[in-house]
Length: 315
Image (cartoon, rainbow, N blue to C red; front, side, top):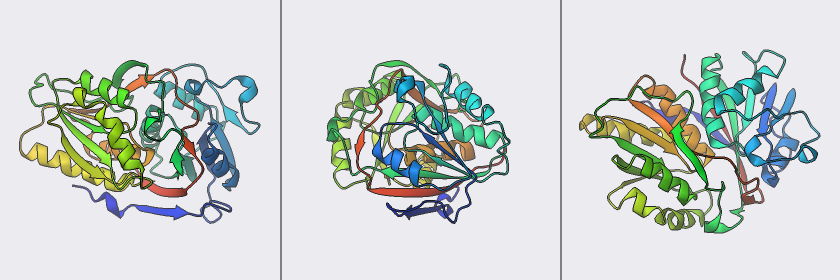
């Protein structure tokens, strides 16, 4: 088992400049209406800053930012990410890169880590801004919950076995109970494992999360195993995943493994990092319930900013 807890994370000041001593040459942030996204973008010091605008947020041309941005045509997460970096007009290997993950739509962020790894970018800094609270508390939805398909995320497709007798699905439980249900139902035969974010981002969010997850209980099943990892820590999340899967494999209880990160962006990074480090080429994949529309603003205020120094494995 890899020790992901050796990776570096730190809390940044809520006010003042960000990145003064980091020497970031490229800063990328996903454009949304969220105050916590806009404030961080304004405060970051970097050689070049650029927004990536995702079509699923549905911004009209007149709503787009005055700063440098990229808006491509509709495409999957792999093609869109490739088009974004192709449009940069400069080489990025060897550059110091920082990505604010707060506004990223999850499949794009998952694939981004794979794209970095495949293009020789072994290290980058990731930011994540915690809200003071979610806008509708436990009723907050991050997408329109109209799932078009549940499929593997590009770059995380596994070499799956024909034997499905001991398939396992690990769901990182978020607020969107409809998404949880769709994922669970797509692998109805699989043994379910739930990974909750605890400690949560804010004191009240764990209870909100549990209330929403309860609405998906019928699809997940009452026999699901439950584990916990800090909602703001990708590295602890990766370590917990490694421990869970290691125990199941040693007991001969896994034929195919499916991971579905539906909670916080830091935990999502943990899922992707764990997969890239330990699961490539195995009977494992990351699956996601894809939607056409996502909500532009889900939180209120800016409570805390985290910086994670992510080190990716070699190709």
